[in-house]
Image (cartoon, rainbow, N blue to C red; front, side, top):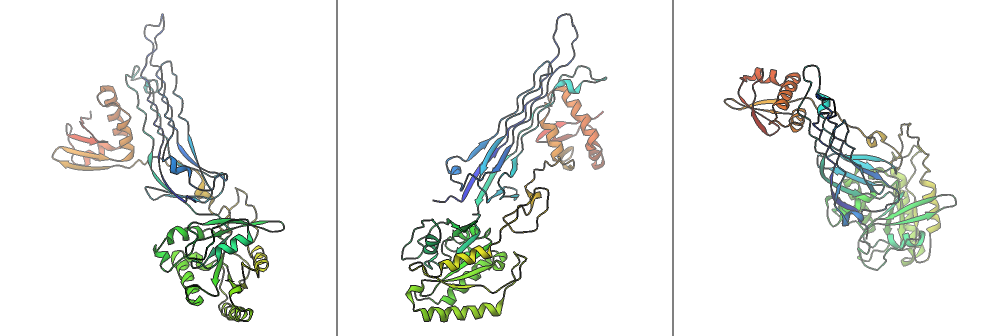
Length: 448
C-alpha cells in the first residue's frame, strides 16, 4: 500500500537557562559574577531523502522532538546546544504548517527548518557592568516552536497514465515496464498509484498508473483529490481511452470527462503535453480502430494546443492504437514517450532556473531563513488603571525573567523604557502604579 498522507507533531527543543553564579575561590573574598549562558534548543529539520519512497514510517510514529539546550553553569561554563532532529521524507513531499506555510521538498538534499529551537538565557555574567557589578538574576531559556504538520506525497513521475476506470492503464503499464499492478476485468481495480520504469537505450522514464477518475473527481468525488494530486508533477500525460467500454459508455464522453476534471483540478494540467492511447484494439476490427484514430487525429490537428511546459513548437496530440493483449502499438508508444519527454539539463545551485517542475525551479523557496523577532507591540486599556501590552518581543522579554526578583524586574522596566513601551503607555493615559498585563503576567508598573 502506498502511504501518501501523514500528520505529525514536531517540537523543537527549549533553550537552557542562564546561570546565576558568583566566583568562589580561596583568597578572593569578593569574586564577581561568573554564570554561563544556556545553550540553544535543537531544531526539527525535514530532509528530502531519495532513499525513501512513501510516508509509511510516519504511520508508526507521529511525534518528533529535538534535544533541549543544557543550562549554563558557574565559572562561565555555557550550556551545550541541543541536538537538531532530522526527519527524512521522500522527494515529492509537500509540507503544510498550521499557519498555512507550504514547503515543497522535491530536490534530494533539500532541508527546511519546520520548528526552530528556543534561544538560551544569558547568565548573570552578561548583565554585569559599571553600575551593576553583582547582578543577582539570569535569563531563562525560551521554549522551542511546536505544531502539527500535514505531509502529502505527490509522486515524481515523468509520465502519468490517466483515464476512466477499467480503461486499460494497468495493462499498459505491466506490458511496458516491470511493474506488476493488479489487473482485473472490473472498474477501480487499481486503488493506489503504481510506478513503473520504462527503459530506453540510454535513459529511463518513470510511468505512474493513476487510478481511474470519475466525473466530479476534481470536486472530491470518489478519491479524486487523492488521485489527481499524483498527476501534478508529471511532465506528460497519456490519456488511455477504451475503444470498446464494457459499460457501453461513449469514448468521446469519457475523454471529455477526464479532460474536464484535470482542468478543474489544476489549470496547468490542461496545458501539459499528452498522448492519446486507444486501448483494447484487439476487441474491435483493425478497420474500426483506424477509423476512430483518424477521427481523433483530425480533431487534434484542428486544435493544435499550445504547450507552455516546453519551448519546442506545439504539435498535434499523437494518437496511437494499442493492445496490451497483442502488443500492438506498444513499441510506437514507447518511442513516442522517449521522444517527447526531454532530458532535463542539470542545474547548478547558483543558477536561476526557468524550466520544468522536476528541476530546481524555485530554489529560494528551499533555502533556510531565520526571521528576526518582530519589534512591534500594541497597547490597549482594559479598564480604569488596567492596561495590556502585546507583542512578540515583549512576550519574549517577560518570559525570560523572574518578575518576583527585584533586580530582574528593574532590568525588565529598563528594557521596556528602551523599547518605547513606557512612552506608548503614557501616551494612552497610563499613570505610575497602574496594573499592566504583559505576556500573561499582571504586575504594578511604577517606572522611575
